[in-house]
Length: 440
Ligand code: URA
Image 1 (tube, helix red, strand yellow):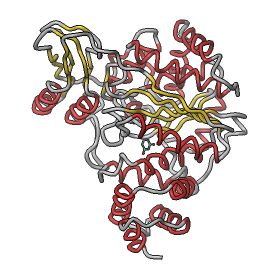
Image 2 (cartoon, helix red, strand yellow):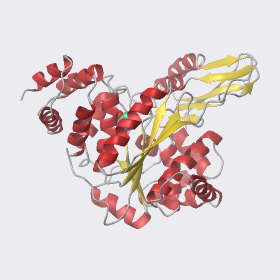
Image 3 (cartoon, helix red, strand yellow):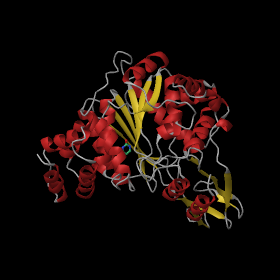
Image 4 (cartoon, protein in one colour):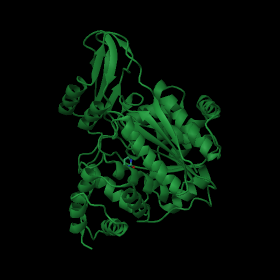
């Protein structure tokens, strides 16, 4: 087979065979296909799409590109979660310790920022010393000893996705339904979970802009997971405005800690409780949705009694992080320049555009434009208003945290366009649009 022929076939709208997909994925993983050909192939898939059969083949080829973890010696029934990517999405940092504190072990591998969306691993790296790279053995050992592990994808697990993910980030090929579905599900299948909760984001700050598109992505992923024998729950959640208030790596860690300590924004707390409750129920192999409220109340108690926060400290300590930064989040990296953007007039907040906030945060240096770019953990934006709030002229809409005056000015120019006002009180945005379950 030749890479050019496979690229051309997809470019011209053809349907690739299982063998062609496997050959391409294996070749790229082994470095016999270079980045420029893989980039062209990704763009062809982005533009032409993939049939459900091709998407399944791509997922399985990526899952089989490295080792498949067997967690059964340490967790008889493992539950995992994954978000399709959003703005201010620090949910894993809150949910994992809560679920682990409830006695359901969690072993999760997360990604770096992708496109405009942030990544859990970049966030965790703002805690000095936190090791995001663990070997498979360390991963297993930690979940055995602590019931919680949160690290980057190990090199041996779905290495094809590791490479393709980084390449997509810098080639404009992120928001593609088959590429997102295969990227997420290949990792989840290889990581060995028995049950998976998917947080499928929809709106301006998500890769899926419309509910129907997001439902289709959720449906494909639930189908892939169920077909592979996994118990699946997929929630469609709003991402038209940022989740919580903080957007930017250290700022988000700080907000996650506040939430685990019983404070933090109400929307973030509620979101984490709902996602966590689904994980707890799946982890205990409970079926039906009737008792979700009980699991929500159990996790809320673990916030109130400090159990979740203690588990987060244990996680950071186990992975070599500086726990004094968790105890005193003022010690996390902080930006030199902090500036509020005030409202120009009185009114109700009708929209806080998540994508514009994400772009401002990228301008400040919180994300990457090229694969090798460093990121600045300290910078970002704190959103000070939510859709439905009534504001007076002069009230702060955003606080910018920057380390460079020119970048601050660029972020300010973007953020000045990010809020829309209305005279009357607008409808609040729903937190969730729908929940899909597997039919195993
Ligand atoms: N998260 C992933 O892991 N992959 C994607 O493609 C998008 C979000």
